Image (cartoon, rainbow, N blue to C red; front, side, top):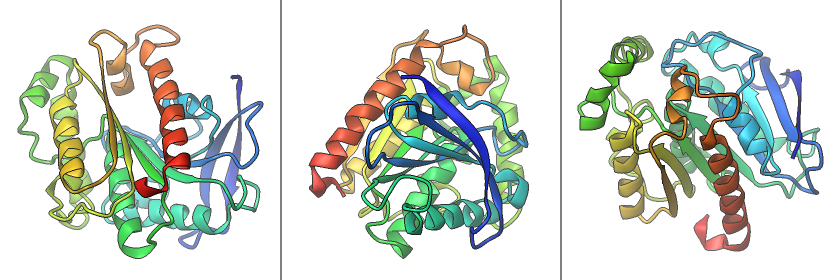
Length: 271
């Protein structure tokens, strides 16, 4: 499916106008799902209006994806990041018929790396403040553990990511402490959150904390679909590396997200 995009300003968000790049397939169907997409960047990325390969992959599955600039308003500091992201989520939940999807559209939150952390935080806050508004969360190699003590993350030194993540966590948490919304892997109450689609890869430095969080969600009774991609699928490219114009992981994300959409649509008990 060919994906088109346009830049727009979400000017009626309660916290203030938020810029977004909207991705959608050229032939998306009636009542398309809406995805709030939160970019990665180790809580340091300030880039706006750049292509987001993950967002494109989700749009290829038939969704309308709003890749929002949460960094400009928040300075990449907690709790401001979550305030901005949740404010956009609330706007999308209340305004589905105003240009993005319609009132029957399912609503998801998705994020990669640092954005995966924020997406998990939005899912927790949605459970607590807007029950049933969120239909699913998509966590793509989420950065969840500020202590970075896993075996797989220690290997990140080889690609220069461990120091970058250390600096990112220090910056992100300097604004307001280590609340469970800021570090979801430390949250002691995970039951009741929206079903999750989780991705990692065998050679992903965030493999262990991603798998661990998925296991804890399952133990809490949350519906989880977890996919570990083979080594060599280009997965490290989400950390800034290059692996060709169309890394293999993009096809995996699109296909498995499409299946996740079907599961959530036909199995209301997953909500």
